[in-house]
Every structure is written in structure tokens, then in C-alpha cells.
Length: 95
Image (tube, rainbow, N blue to C red):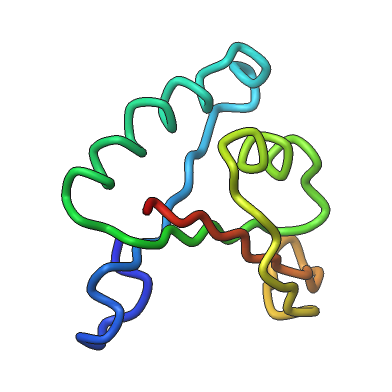
């Protein structure tokens, strides 16, 4: 998915994986990213952004295992389950 719609961001994509809670811990997220990242690199993407609702230690660990680094946190910008949530961004350069 494009990270932003303006032409200046054509080489940046937002990535995420969602795994059924009953299937977490089976390595599915790692398998998906292992397949996806080379495709995005081949398609000419330069930077990937991952948006993670916090806290989410498992998602942070998954992204950091692939080399993503924390780029910043926005406080109380997400709302679900009648609660405000912080959202962190992780980035990965494909160059």
C-alpha cells in the first residue's frame, strides 16, 4: 500500500501482516515478510513503513527481526475498543 498519495512518496510503502490469533507463534508472519520484502525491493521501493499499535511486543519483535527500526511514536492517535492507543512507526530501507 502506498505510504502517502503524493508523488514524492512513490518509493515508500506501508506494510503490515495480520495473523489470526489462533495461528500466532507459528512463523506465519516471518514467512509472509520473507516472501514480501524481496518483491518490494525488486519493484523499486526504497523505504518501508510499518505502523504498530502499542503495546505489541510480538509485532515489534517480528519487524525488528527483519531489520526495521523504530522511527517514532504518536500518542493516543488510534482508537479501538473504546480506548485510545499509541501508534509506533518502524522503518526499513531496502537499499
